[in-house]
Image 1: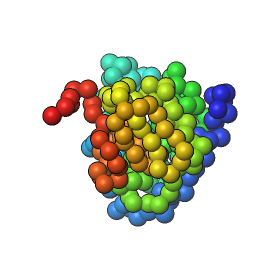
Image 2: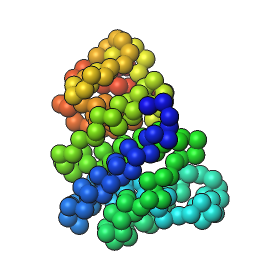
Image 3: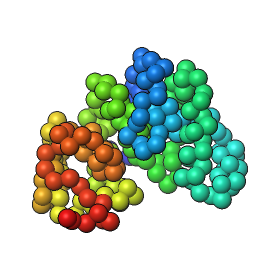
Length: 211
């Protein structure tokens, strides 16, 4: 999709689909450990929905108070807002403000990557059967590889051939790694998933090297 603005309905649909799914889980399941280290489902959704609760001025004031350390602020807000009623967090996922939010410099491509990956961070540990629509996961995979977004997560795809098992998508050449589109996207983002879900050599972070 060439025009970034065309992705806005796709972004909104992903938020709504995630809200619909989380609306059906128990309070105990909200405490499930997510694929984000140290965060439960609650913290992930509190983080994902920040733009629905914080106007730009308030957010920038809090960022300034954290010495412009976004990671520090993100962890702070995730811990704090994870205590909100789950009904409020689900309502935030349905917010029109959130559906039109884009990360600084990231546009709707950035927003789509954000909701898809964090959505999977919660859905996979919950064992829920939802699949990301092909249109959305293709954009995410292209952004993570051809767009180079994977570098932000420290994963190395040099000399690697990535191929999905559930759609006709591939990238690169070399040592094979096969899996569903969702699982390939997750490992590109540095997430740890069960080894049996993938076929081939795992992706390495540059600091890991080879044994």
